[in-house]
Length: 285
Image 1 (tube, rainbow, N blue to C red):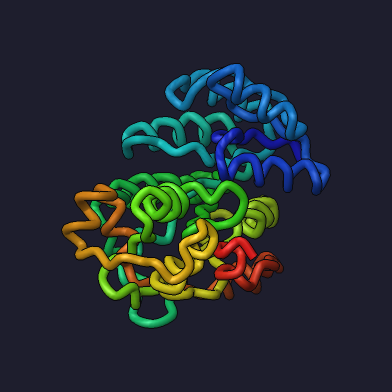
Image 2 (tube, one colour; image 1 turned 45 degrees about the horizontal axis):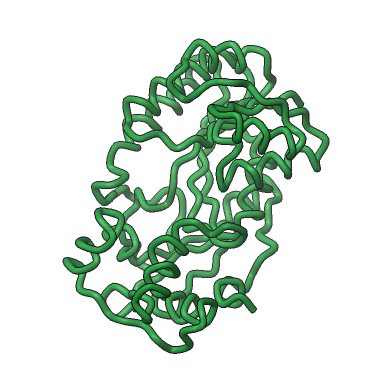
């Protein structure tokens, strides 16, 4: 299948392009810079020069494709909706996969699924009107699908390294918000990439959680990261206000208590997460 990917040189994008090529799909990928173009080319994709704001470029690339996977991270809801609209206009009745995230649900009361009510922290509150507009295309002959990955790990591990590993190395102790008893819905980057490939055949209007089904506590994750950076057992508890001062608004997302099941994707798409020991991976074992 001819597939156009935005965000192809990013963390999720590189893994997804690799998975698409491995499954025999032909890939074009948006590339804003020469470095990004070289990255996606090395993965087996054809670069399409432009950025997320180049709506004509997005529209034309989508029109050449049979499916679109929108992975690029927008800075605002308006930017994301404009890009999604251009992509969906271009792809028409082809599959359009849009990326969200589990943080939009806020705290869960035990194990939740895609039907849970939304209660997003401010950092992702803009996603709801965008996803509603994306999914509304199913009523107009489109094939939108929304995938909401959990907290990613494996590979470059950007968020966890940036906000936990790097500060830990700098201060001698990995941060942990409160007592760390809240759960993180971790998912391996390679498993999420396989979910995007599987979702190319999903029904219009489908929504899937990209989660591993194993939700360790934030404290256990912090201890694992501490091991990985040579600080065994060395964590420091931050109040939420202290975490906000150190991390910014993403602290409210890291403080969420979330547990999710991947059952819908397993049942409807046959997608089963292969990585089942996130703490070992975080610890570098």
